[in-house]
Image 1: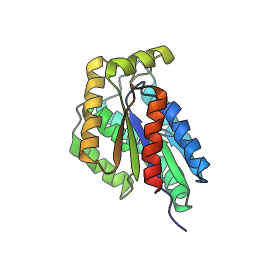
Image 2 (image 1 turned 60 degrees about the horizontal axis):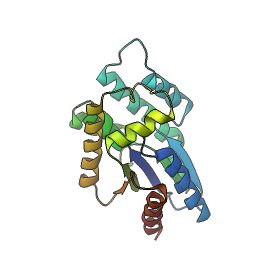
Image 3 (image 1 turned 60 degrees about the vertical axis):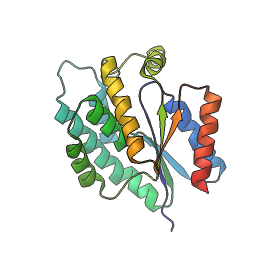
Length: 207
């Protein structure tokens, strides 16, 4: 059986990941592709509990190392119980964020050691990497305005603007480092133009 493909969707706050994840899912299904849609952190019962802990604006401050380890613990569960089994069955996996987000949020936003993230990536993932990553990029001010209109902020969304500027820079660096895998779309243009860009990227990938 042919192994499935692994597609991830990345971006900062308010760039339209949820809307466009659904759009990509429908586009793949229209091309008769069986697709599993999931998210990080999360995707399994234990990983979702870790997500709740990570996002909760609680009284106890989570240390940067605890945050990083919780993310990779959730990822280990996610890979073992959702991602790898689906790919092995020939299904495609479409994931809202993956390890590029860790390089952006913990590496960029938290200024954590990149070599530590790389070590954990290798330990937890082995050779698993996305086949295609779509990065939705927008100026931080625009993204935060959209996020503010959407719902109450979680622990990450409550960070200062400088944090999100660093996250964006780290995402753009990842795109520069991995141009064959990461395809960038400007998310501050009209939705119809964003989705035309998505069709172009996904159709080229299907070919």
